[in-house]
Image 1 (cartoon, rainbow, N blue to C red):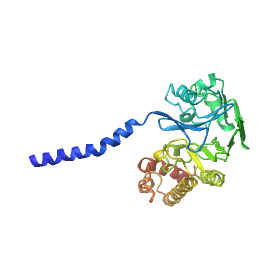
Image 2 (image 1 turned 135 degrees about the vertical axis):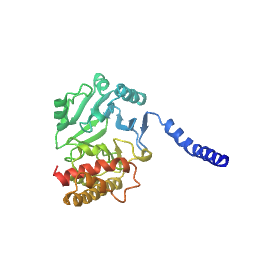
Image 3 (image 1 turned 90 degrees about the horizontal axis):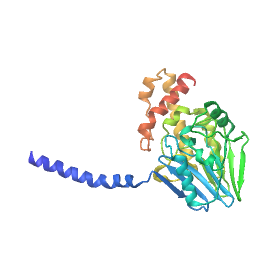
Image 4 (image 1 turned 45 degrees about the horizontal axis):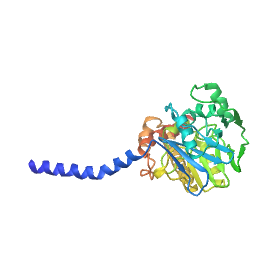
Length: 297
């Protein structure tokens, strides 16, 4: 018995030695961070928790995106403070990626500082209906044909490519820097999860193909990818492959009359088990594709 206690104690010490540095690294990650995008002069990523936004500094002012302050009462001000640590130029524009509150709530500090808020026309319509007290209504609406913001020699192209994670998503492209900012529809190197609730499966495949066809090299996602790395066209192609595989597998199960419970238990999405978020995301993917192929929704 003493020998077993000694073995157990040794194992605990060894485990602590292995896990200690990991927990320390996690604890060292600050809740809020600002990072300049490598290889650019004026493109930054602002991260608050597990949400992030892009802002661009120009000689005539700043173009910011999503305030990412849902559930964080001081999040919008923290974002504005982070920008002011980089530049004293005023924030001229705040562009919403889409209309979901977890990304766009909390912009009051920017509005009070004089920023003009821009969103896709459908986002503006939806936000006017919802009248969320924490979310600033857009001042200007982007039509389906798109719009380009030009400020201080920088161009930011806002384009709409149909239904995807939402019906109001703008793809933002910096043509000079060859960078995209796309939120939620394209996770980088990980399995999609709760966002599948709002997902338009068939249309998203077309959306991803359109994004792949665009001229760009790197993608800033609305949630950090593994190691905080930026996305590539291969990441978009891999995400498209995952969705197509999920769709085909659930189509078979649904047409056998197995939706919901049986199909969701049998759904495994083989080949993606090692992707981050697999265990948590699988039920959401199964439920959404059961909705598509089992209910036609």
